[in-house]
Image (tube, rainbow, N blue to C red; front, side):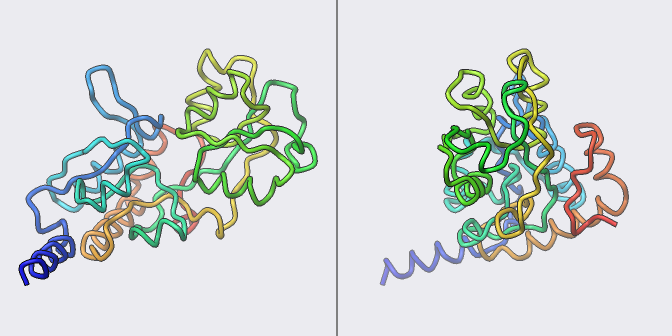
Length: 258
């Protein structure tokens, strides 16, 4: 009976909304510029960090940021280490089995990157037999597996590592975020001699559902309040002003565009 009571108590604790606590804890990463990065003094900054802070302001709650390695994000949320994740997490059917998501708060197209002049295009025929580098277990990786069956896929654990592996010559071409490839690689010294290949690619809805904020299953109160805050900042111009400090193109999710 004590075992059953303990199990029920734990379930009740996890089913209570995080808004009932004094502080809402937000899981962030810190290794995904310009969305999140850590300064030498430990200060977190980036678009994800700004979104987390402004949502807390609009909800009128106190929040604290909890830095977490990417691979442990969902397990840490489930273990109650924090209450929601603001870390550029793409909404997928697989992830929705483990967490609930807010409405998308941004959407960024994908891009191929290779040595300058190495490829004129990126069709499956042109990349047959070539090694494509991509983030492991990502919608982009699934897209490559489905679309480029004749290519070798080299999966790595972090988005910035996609381009470091390319620069090190461990693959022929990289596939990732059009923002990260530019900001974290092509605009840096290590990106000299490399360029984006072809046009941007918007993955289909079945593969990529935009980027959302993740919550533990059942915390509908927190999810609703966050969605209301997102609508508010998108309607009053706050979102556009924040995004303009990082991007020179529209990252607004399709559902929020005029």
